Length: 191
Image (tube, rainbow, N blue to C red; front, side, top):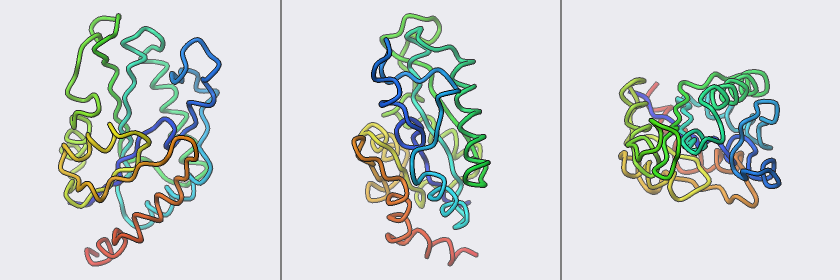
């Protein structure tokens, strides 16, 4: 079983807040034409991939439950993100998981709480089961406390949860932190 780096999507890998700030629904990115990797993401993903980590995206997408985006739009944005990761970083994500549920939603059947919705650990646990991942040796890079809370609830050590500041995202520095805290040594021992 190999370790993973679990990755939040919006404002961790791709720009969201700044692109949607002046729309009727700030924070809800529904147009794949707007999807772009944040600075440092391509380089950081490539380095983590070369080190042997599984790379797994875990993203709340409650905009579906609130009727702002459709499942198809979320999946189109995810496809565009995968395409950019492939062309700019030379990597494939091992998995992309998202939760379309929200307890204050209006669209059935998504207007409910769900065990995949962060801070619940469902997406992490599903990915670990699907991909054969070792959660005790995995990491999280996200932009909100709920990302870390979900990772910790899934069994990832609090010290392996990196929160990038939303006002100054620096994914490359977060990836470097994984290596400086022993992530790379651990993988080299395994080989």
